[in-house]
Image (cartoon, rainbow, N blue to C red; front, side):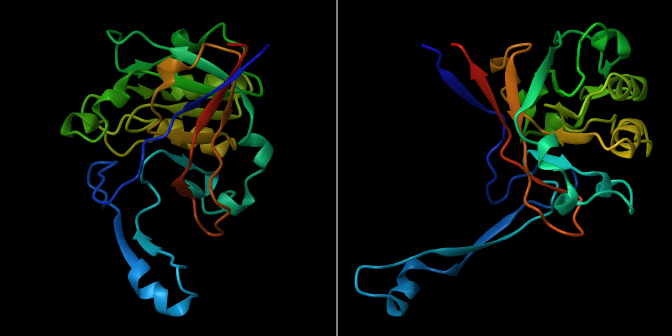
Length: 224
């Protein structure tokens, strides 16, 4: 009998979490405490309501085209069929390789209609000062190759899909989001997902006028 395994690919969000160097950490506070709620409800009934203040680039998040382009689709404008149950093509990369993920690393893989997930192992540094320096990234040529090959979404377990130490250039974001290919950054646990055969989901809330927001990314692995 076939069984299904769910692999969580998201980092938990907590107060004080630093995701991206230089961006603010989330602040979580109560709006209504359980104690204060008791006077509003029947005896024995209580609730907690909480506030969170955070930048969209927190935890494991998705970039929509609006993140890069003012006329691009925002979070509310994304087609759910490009976010849910996508065939996952996982590129397991050797840790001793160079930082740039190139066309040579991607060649020969059938990615049409797929979520391409770049497993670098860099998530081991998440939440530490080492995370923001020397991180792996997807080259602009590699990004264009994935577009030409028909990828729907590209995810990475690194601090950015681009090289944040190369100046202000962001070629991977530019070509991927310009082509309507979603980007998911700060994934984790990709080593637990097989090279192919899994299904990937990463759906953000439908927020109008917003380009980036955390997702609960996960993979569904059948037949184990």
